[in-house]
Amino acid sequence: MDDRIRMTLDEARPLVEDVLSRHGLGAAHVDAVADIIMAGERDGGGSHGIYRLLLCVDTIKAGKVSPDAEPSVQDVAPALVRVDARGGFAPLAFRKARPLLVEKAKRCGIAALGINHCFHFAALWPEVEALARDGLAAFAFTPSHAWVAPFGGRRPLFGTNPLAFGWPRPGRDPFVFDFATSAVARGEIELHRRAGKPIPLGWGVDPCGEPTTDPAEALAGAMLPFGGHKGSALAAMIELIAGPLIGDMTSMESLAYDDGANAAPYGGELVIAIDPAGFLGTAAAEHLARAEQVFEGIVSQGARLPSLRRYEARRRSQREGVHVDRALLDEIYGLLNAEGTSP
Ligand code: NDP
Ligand code: PYC
Image (cartoon, rainbow, N blue to C red):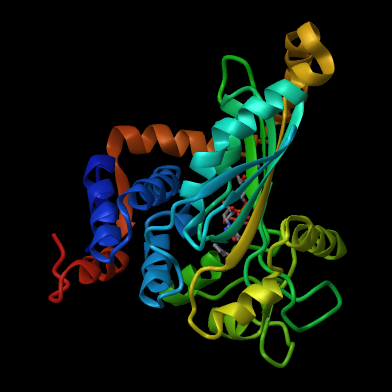
């Protein structure tokens, strides 16, 4: 028996929306959250697709997130935007603030957005991809919960702290990458635990600080940063620039605020957008064309561009639908009705 079920995107989205609505999430949030979950599923992003619905529902059930929060966008300086998510999920706050961020970046050449007081469960690439499609180079950063030991340490301090980058490519899909500064996202270790699969050495240590291949032990102990001291320093940077710099929580503070509820991380996100025309004026097109040589240099040696797999998965999903793990789908139908019947 195939342990996956094929669904078209048009079949999957109403299911996601239904689950969120039935758990009391307001309509505007349902739409924004469903957009980002479906984008993850469509692009083959296992840990941040439909699987994330479980964390969203847990966060709602824990009474942590404000289900009807109306984000408030504030124009704080010529090149700065803040949006107070008011305890809601992050995607609606970004959606509301994005037009002003883009307008400011195009006016000033560079602009930054601080998202405050949001519950963050999502991948960051949809945000930097959208900004790159607006013609901007973009960065996004967010802390999470303290799950990751610093390089040389054994106790959790940092979040899995993703960083994402988008670059506009005229006439082509933007260049985008997005990854955790831990060896892998926590969601990926959870998926290994659910599937009963070991994790590679280097992803985490057990509660005694010893290397482990057991996902449950790594989740109970500490995850490790990618790239040794380099990933560890980037994780520290993200704690600072998407925490105290914008007046929001570090991953330690987020985990303390969670207080055992197992809800999504609570805190802030920093997004920076740069308009190439700010530095270059009318010469921007010429320099963006020159930038293409970097991508050509990568692919000409048989290496692949980050985001290529995702764009291919997107086109395949739009054509053929997605394949959702049967056990996950059963769990999701269980959230819809007491019987937990699957299709
Ligand atoms: P990965 O380690 O899988 O890295 C993903 C990135 O690396 C993608 O941009 C991917 O491109 C690229 N990539 C992977 N393999 C290659 C390759 N062989 N050649 C070139 N590029 C490659 O992801 P993570 O587990 O670190 O993170 C997954 C997601 O989790 C991210 O989207 C992140 O935002 C999210 N996350 C969110 C958190 C939050 O607090 N909100 C916390 C932590 C993670 P491609 O997509 O094309 O494969
Ligand atoms: O997978 O590490 C993760 C994560 C944290 C918050 C959202 N995703």
